[in-house]
Length: 172
Image 1 (cartoon, rainbow, N blue to C red):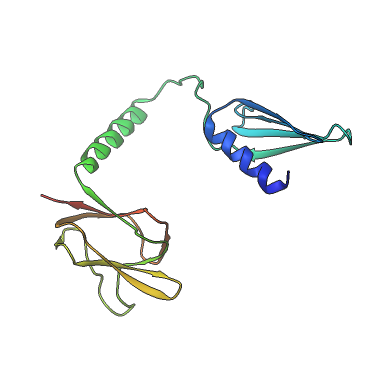
Image 2: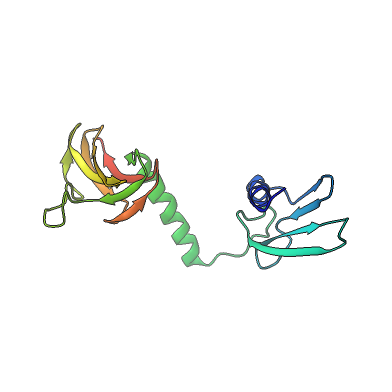
């Protein structure tokens, strides 16, 4: 088992929410424990029975343990939580335009031109919203919906991932 396989196993265990996993193979024994550290880290220990040695590593934890005690929230935190919930509910009525490819997001066709769309602009199907550059090719991203641009979710010249939200559109 090489280092890459061990790292993938650690990531898988962290995402699964398991608190401890033990794996024994021919000459290697691996124990992965998550959520046991107070500093919010994942500890994994590789033990090699044949060599008798032991290595211990610390890696950032991917998820928070389910059984963390709830702390008392201040009135400001409660208000912020309610505001976030309200924003999420408001955003739910909008259509999200997502990136169809990985690349660099540009709001303008070139540096000396104006942006394709601004917040408040009305758009229709087929209108160009932005350009995503991938491997020196500039791909125009066209709207698949009609409506009004409510929010631009990505900064100009920023890298974007496949299926990353780019714009919120109000279809009404």
